[in-house]
Image 1 (cartoon, rainbow, N blue to C red):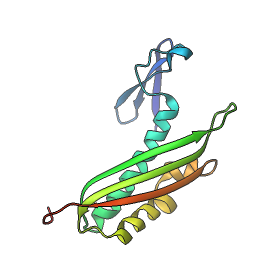
Image 2: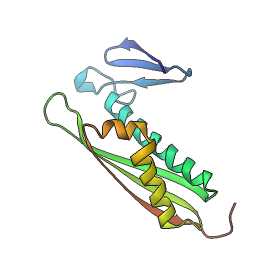
Image 3: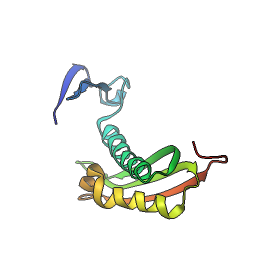
Length: 143
């Protein structure tokens, strides 16, 4: 896996993934940025949420469960001192579908947290990671 990060100006960078996708990363105005992109630590948090949500969705789909939506809301706390590492990260999943059982979604979230999500497992080496979820039943037949 590779990435290339190119400085544009001030505190703005363009990061390009090995698969050819690009994103703008920028700092806050008080740090010389123009607020034109996500902050680097926000990107890390977003990647962690996406990694875990991907796992949860994949596990549920492989189990042939009817999922219509999956949202992962991530919140974090950082240390006051430099380096301002994440000290606590919480992932809250909102999974919608037809006939989804709490136990099935719980197991998918646990599997992601304990076995599959490389990002959250890696960050769990230095931060307290917690997870919870809610299931929203969508009325009507399976899609």
